[in-house]
Length: 127
Image (cartoon, rainbow, N blue to C red; front, side, top):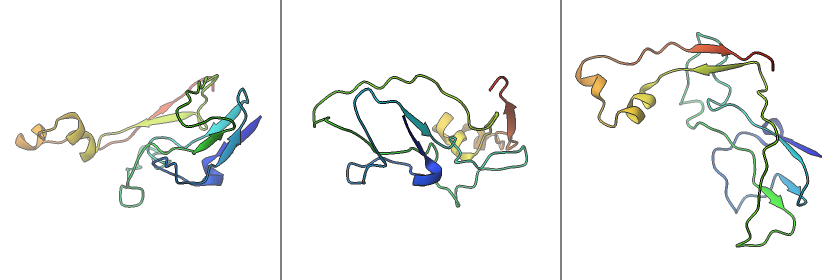
């Protein structure tokens, strides 16, 4: 069993076939992958705000991962056996990005309002 972590590979926000694989696995091999949360670890307490200048993207990935013996055009099956948070909490928040994403035309701007900018930390029990 191999383990690969964003702490070793760094945060990436896209996978490319031109990048060197961060791990090589055999078919049927178990791999533990540790990734950061969607806000790249920026939201840890209620006073935190998402800083898109420091980290402009969200939803980091770990990879690419090379499957030994796989050839172009082959299909592979990945079974996710377990998902565990690395910390016992999650975070929710609204930003200007959310407003544009949820309402293509920024309706809230027409009424002179915005979504609240407060971060809500959600504890995860039984981790």
